[in-house]
Amino acid sequence: MLDQLLRRAAGRLAAAGVPSPLVDARLIAAHLLDVGHMSVHRLREEDLPAGFSADFEAALTRREAREPLQHILGVAPFGHLDLVVGPGVFIPRPETEVLADWGVRRLAGAAAPTVVDLCAGSGALALYVATLMPSARVVAVEKQVSALDWARKNVDRLAPQVELTLGDVTDPGLLPELHGAVDLVLTNPPYVPETPELDPEVYSDPPEAVFAGADGMATIDRMTGLLANLLREGGAVGVEHDDSTSGAVQEALRATGDFREVAALADLTGRPRFVTAVRGVSS
Image 1 (tube, helix red, strand yellow):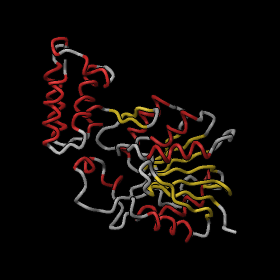
Image 2: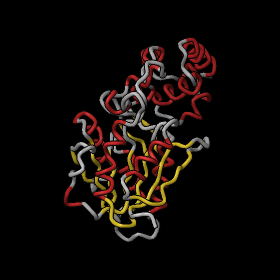
Image 3: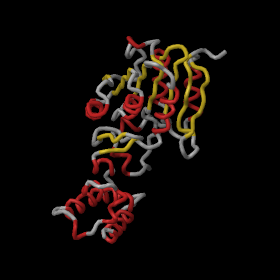
Image 4: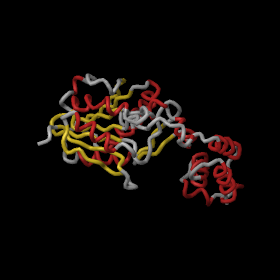
């Protein structure tokens, strides 16, 4: 059985500071063997294909160096999707699935809604909506050409109807043809306060997709005008943010005078991770 091999690999990863060493070792082996990760331990070392040991060692060495597991595997799971990722694009995180699910539930009953994903990265939010609501018009906006290239790969594979746009979300005049016509905006913008103290894997993401000034609000503060311009009356927005800035994000939306029902939305751990709001002046 592979248990002994996986335990040795997990020991190496643990020594390197990898937070989930046995899981990562199992996922690497499963990827190389093209089997489900839960069935890896049932295989015997003598049944492994030629070249597995060398490939496993190479991948393990990369993970020991704290290269993101998703770069090694080439994919990042996001809800029901597997998104291709690599250097040059932000790796979608599981917590963002809460925002995606909120968005789909918000659109329940809508016949043909228009949805915009701002700071789309790999296209995670756009594709989550588009694959579960094929009648929706979904537009994904990304500023970085390298990230848009990855988004295009995912869109071509999963939902070719998604419209990709190169653009800066801090420009309130972006997408003028959609102003006042959008039912839902979802965004996972750069929001991490600049710091050198995060896990090494974070610094493998493009810094412009992660960091947003000393307080993490540089992009969110400058995108509120676009949010207000895009949404129709009664349209909704969901914004992901740092766990220290829920109050600041709520205030940024209220300060525009264009939003009502501004509220915090918690992630699966109960932390405020998102702010939601509805386009329209508070009564």
